[in-house]
Length: 107
Length: 107
Image 1 (cartoon, rainbow over the protein chains, first blue to last red):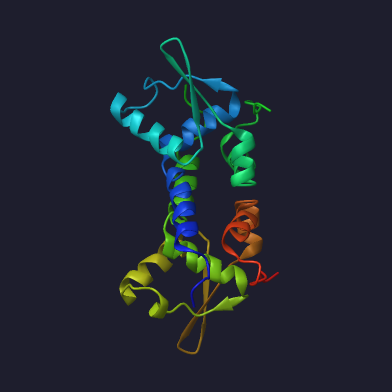
Image 2 (image 1 turned 135 degrees about the vertical axis):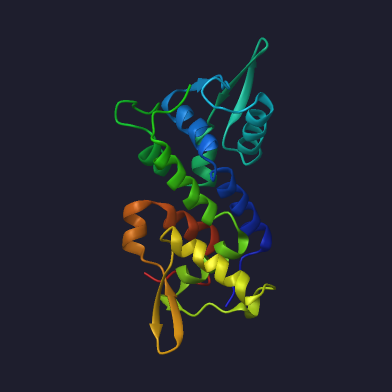
């Protein structure tokens, strides 16, 4: 038994799920599901700035979040169109699991 | 910023994605997407039997695969109904990404 996928396909998908396999990274994505865009600050996480930067890098590397600069401020957002094209259904699943009814997702 | 989910929700979902964050575990799931049920053998993976058992345990622990015994043989399968209920859309995404057109998924 072995599936006929290329190792690249499996590795890329494994990396994508790896990015989602951490509660802080999931929380970052959840917050970005609720609003169009926002800053990401360490305030609510008991982690250092460099650890937060590491989490953000992992999410950026797999295409889950994108950044734009407004002056010296980094603003993060989900590129929903690209994510839906690359990983259909994942944003719906994450919204279902992570976004509470009181916090209607940004559409 | 911090999402209002309980830590339990985030941790459970993070564990689920962790189970999918390894190429061998993804391959096991891919093979079970193509057939109803099958044995899982080390033959095609350059890993030991104990390492394979470890991968299988991780997949079982998050509910991705189930096992039944036929004599002394362990037969593995996906409990599609339960997975679709718990994680809607994930099997469709995995099928899209991992199952080649030549290998029609088992329905």
